[in-house]
Length: 302
Image 1: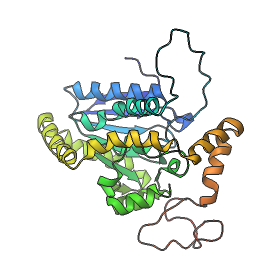
Image 2: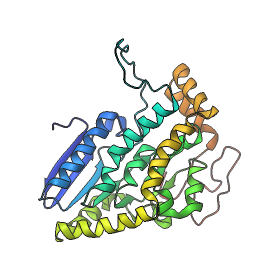
Image 3: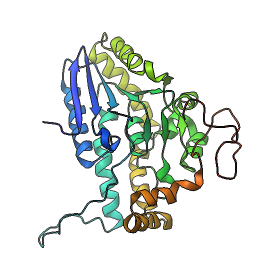
């Protein structure tokens, strides 16, 4: 398969898959999601590959799903496919997209997410299904669409950070820095941005010395443990729950503003009142009247 939105290379026991829409901050288009799914299964089938590195080109890992308005072609009179107009259609589409991402969880070989810049919304849906996440300390991680557009269509947050931090971040849509994400277990580790690539490559060097069948056995028993804790069922429920949340008045308002005023204006309406849009771990959150921390920018994430 010839890829247009990702780059895939195999060498020294690893497959590096790079999300490659840097001009869009690697926004997840349907095409990119399908190509990523194909590349992941191809790497899983490649006997040379011990582990996969998933990363993003340019300034970000991924800024989320591609919300660029599209002008669909008129439906043919005999087109019997879903038109997206019902709750069930919406849930079906959410589940279709989720099945593509679940390759990260289901494949036998380990996947390490190398995240930098922004890991936002749909970017977190991808990263949190990986086996390990290593972040640059100044990465910004969050799901701001939870403020006005719906719920999270994938939800591994609970299993990484527990219920209280999962709620703290979902119920506000606030961001945490990579350093703070490591402190609460949302990512495995955070390192200075200049050392990120070397840190990830060094970890995969070690896995490349392990028999692929042992890697698979040890990954899969942990994921089976997550399944026994309900992780797979929760992902399925999350997709349907997102369709339910799309019926909220604020989600309808966001859609209306996006159509009438443009996406930028809709995002401004959603986010401006949240000031710096940050959460802090282990430090007070004292804000001014605009919603910014009184003592200045978040450490390491300006």
